[in-house]
Length: 65
Image 1 (tube, rainbow, N blue to C red):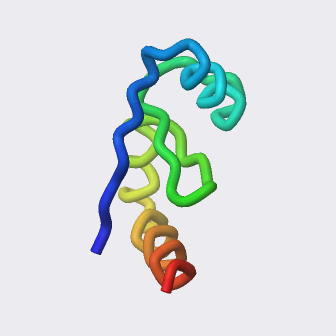
Image 2: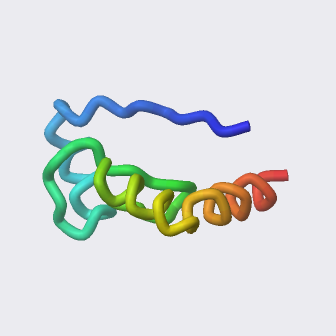
């Protein structure tokens, strides 16, 4: 039940907005679950390894219903 939206950060305004939301991080991908900034690829894998990704996704999905 999880989907994602890919946003092209080549546009300077989009990249600026992403950096504001991502605490100044400039690399891509920057991953958000809802409004929660997760970080990059390594960060989401670490969340999963620690067993914290599924609860975060479940909380987001239950909030959308």
